[in-house]
Amino acid sequence: MRKRKQNIILENIKLVSAGSKGVAVGRTDEGKTVLVSGAVPGDIVNARVKKSKSNYYEAEMIEIVERSPFRVEPKCMHFGVCGGCKWQNLSYDKQLEFKQDEVYNHIKRIAGIEDFETMPILGSDEQYFYRNKMEFSFSNARWLTQYEISSEENFGNRDALGFHIPGMWSKILDLKECFLQEDPSNAMRLAIKKHAVENGLEFFDVKGQQGFLRTVMFRQNSKGEWMVLFQLFREEKENQQKLFDFMLSQFPQIKTLLFCHNSKQNDSLYDQVVKIYSGDGFLMEEMEGLKFKIGPKSFFQTNYKQALNLYAKTLEFADLKGDEVVYDLYTGTGTIAQYVARKAKQVIGIESVQESIDAAKEHAELNGLTNCTFYCGDMKEIFNDEFIAQHPKADVLITDPPRDGMHQKVVEQILKIAPEKIVYVSCNSATQARDLALMKDHYKLVKILPVDMFPQTHHVENIALLIKI
Image (cartoon, rainbow, N blue to C red; front, side, top):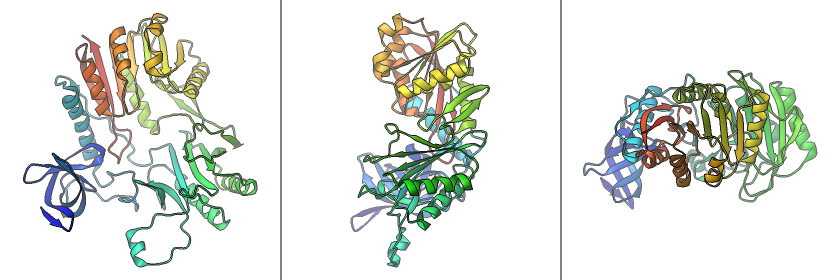
């Protein structure tokens, strides 16, 4: 280790494993842990320390001394600048291996549980072009590369349409290509930018909070039908009509085109009034005979094919015989609830977002499911003794909480009603393991199944089966 000015440079650090958020992990000669961004396990690197803690360093790779045998060439020209797909430079079989290890280690270390079956991680058949929803931002302050800055060239037009640079919300990477959503996603994005520049449409100024074009969202269903939603900072009737008509004429795949005028400080859609310019305002999706109406604000799994696998495995873990009462906590729009309802006596779904519950009820009616009931409320408040007293006892409980996991009050209530079986679906195995630790005196963790919903990233889902002791 040597110091250059105020920088601490760590030399010849061998990276042996993957850590949370996609960093590679190694140790100094003194045994201190080093978390290195921009590298992959198997690399030997020199790295610059960004943060120094008592028992570990956070560092960024500045030079590869020896390349990892697990390294692959990234497909995307924006790799390393764009904040997504951080594992494009790591072979897919190793991505799966490290994701499985992360889930297993979280449960052993955080939950303190040793004796359980770990099923092989369920990989995604599609490692690229697997997302059915993408959102891109407009900006008049395109991100400049270090090369462009050092060239001292005058960049007059800095309009961009793409992704936010990590940690720099006002800067947008102007995307030339993206391998996350299938065609015509790239073609539509590039066509929108070209039309906007040629017609002098004003791109959004994040710092100044002014402009016209703010964001655009592309959503598709499994039948190849597309939804396009524009967020506009202000109304410009002639310009927006010209843009919308251009898109509809160029891309017949667009089933519905929507827009809203959003002059808030943030571009969150959920409190906005969305208007229909063309089509019905929604797409229909089908999953093994079940129909779902997907609107602009609807939550729906972004990896459709892998979501089918996730739901099938959830149902397999539940092992329903047909006479069970099933509680589905954090039910969202009721996709899992309705997927398992055909094998259950009754399903009771609870969710905090009213629009999601409205959609769940509509979907149940659309699918002719009379054994599903849905309730809206803050989970830790509505899932109480009074609610339990008014409903049949749960034989099986399925829970699929957000990344923060379940509130302690919810865990306590689950233990109080004591269903025979719990199937815990999680998008964050660390908070899942924390919750499992709270239940391990009452429930045996039988098995887990990691599921890779997001190839080329460090994110991983996990399904856990618990049986009452």
